Length: 633
Ligand SMILES: CCCCCCCCCC/C=C\CCCCCCCC(=O)SCCNC(=O)CCNC(=O)[C@H](O)C(C)(C)COP(=O)(O)OP(=O)(O)OC[C@H]1O[C@@H](n2cnc3c(N)ncnc32)[C@H](O)[C@@H]1OP(=O)(O)O
Ligand SMILES: Cc1cc2nc3c(=O)[nH]c(=O)nc-3n(C[C@H](O)[C@H](O)[C@H](O)COP(=O)(O)OP(=O)(O)OC[C@H]3O[C@@H](n4cnc5c(N)ncnc54)[C@H](O)[C@@H]3O)c2cc1C
Image 1: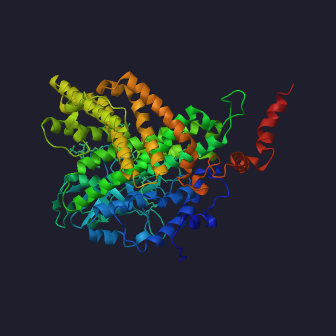
Image 2: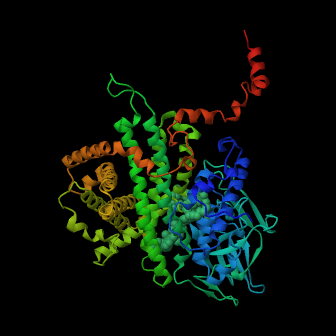
Image 3: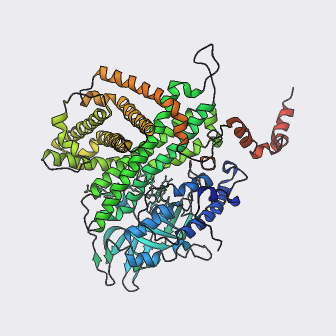
């Protein structure tokens, strides 16, 4: 086995057979997949060696370690689900003995997480795949009773994975105990052929994520040992006794891990888009500001700064909040390990709204970065289109955004009711209890004043939702109907809550560490945090006018301060994106390369198009010429 030393960017990126002769966008769907497996296997080998001396940790803090793959596999790593969900699901939901058994082959097996079905993605209690205990043989029999019960979407399922963790309805002695997780081998380790009783394949081309190998899987009387049910939280004994979980929500734990992780993931996606668009805006000269002076860098247009600097600030906001959320996650997981699940609802609510806001913001901000680069941003060689399609997939996967915001709203309404009954609340929602005391406080045009104002908006909208639900109930609707009738406002409450959290955590974390930083760094970071908070105060001025004592004059002053901040950040803009320290081989962009040779790189890339291999394409003679000659006058 060829052993690699600990991979560092320059080592991995120096491996020759990880480079592409032909840009990925010129390969077929099948060639793309084969190419990414070729490169992914080299990386998988490196990570396997690297991980041999490390136990599979249930929860590894967000790091950029797997970022190297972003440069190697510009689209998506088909092995990602193995690391993102398959291993965490086993370490999170299996007993220690099962972990030892299922993971004994280490990286000798490649897994995915098969939960979503053709007919169900959100409503997990509606999943149709069944796992029925056969007492006589001490096995579970897995079946896909309908076409809609086929697993559909799991990454790597089509042709890459040979194992998966499957979410299926557990049936014991004719009784359904709801969704549970099962460890299932789906392909022969040696031949990679699908095992008998399975129907496996790839779901077809998508708007992006096309090397993720998302697949489908159908079971027909497929048998697995009883011990293959992940039994950390609930168990099925040999005699068919079902032992309930202390908390059925623990089954959903793997999804929380990825949702928490995605905040940091989106920070990095945005850092790449900001680096590309800001560097390009410093190179691109177009039009005049003063008629009698040369064409200017488009970065000197204030409106260009307005489009782009929010992405720099947001990347830092997501990075800082991502670490804050990760610390919360780690603490809650530690508590759960000690038997306390008190903070799980809070973690679920936080991860749902922050995952949604970070993925949605990453999507529209990356698109804004692309549009700010004009036509050249529309080239695949800019890498902005791929960043967009990769980021926006996250708005849907790991919990569709609307659905997750409603989950957070459920927590806000419960917290509001507890606040109205005088109960004490966790720090992340304690502001709900202070609404009536602070509702008419004098507005302060400071970052802290804005954060306090945004919290008043959350409380005010949550109060309005609670009243709306009560109104519908009093008119005869059931609670669930009243909830549905109020869902437009409930989404607004969650969105406001998420924004207030991001502003608060960003500002106070920066403020907390600023005394430990060099003065220059502290000044710039605070400028970015203040820009972020002021940007959103101006975006949400309507809500602030309704729920706080902010005045038109205050808003005018905020607009003035915002424009001051743009001017203050302008001299550091290129330095700020350089400090993301994303090397060219990972940025993969003709517009964003460090040396600024944009036009030369664009031409070099264009000449790699297969169409440029000859001056006259054969289609002229085959198709065009006969028509031209026929109609030639
Ligand atoms: C190469 C090396 C790499 C190494 C690094 C790896 C790092 C990872 C990087 C990550 C980045 C990218 C990779 C990702 C690639 C793509 C992955 C995509 C994977 C998937 O999409 S998996 C499928 C995801 N599916 C979902 O999320 C389904 C969404 N639906 C649900 O969660 C639920 O159905 C629901 C919407 C919550 C509804 O639940 P239910 O029907 O039960 O209804 P209720 O609303 O009544 O809820 C009941 C009750 O339960 C609480 N609850 C619900 N969910 C959770 C939870 N997850 N945790 C805790 N509690 C939960 C809810 O609050 C209710 O409680 P209450 O009654 O109010 O007390
Ligand atoms: C790129 C990508 C990768 C993926 N990878 C995986 C994977 O590896 N493993 C896996 O198991 N799954 C994976 N998925 C599937 C993903 O988790 C689901 O697509 C997601 O959970 C949404 O479910 P759905 O697609 O069935 O949409 P649905 O749940 O049908 O939702 C459709 C629409 O209905 C709305 N809706 C649904 N329920 C409600 C409600 N209660 N209230 C209000 N509105 C509602 C939603 O808001 C949404 O707009 C992936 C998906 C994508 C796009």
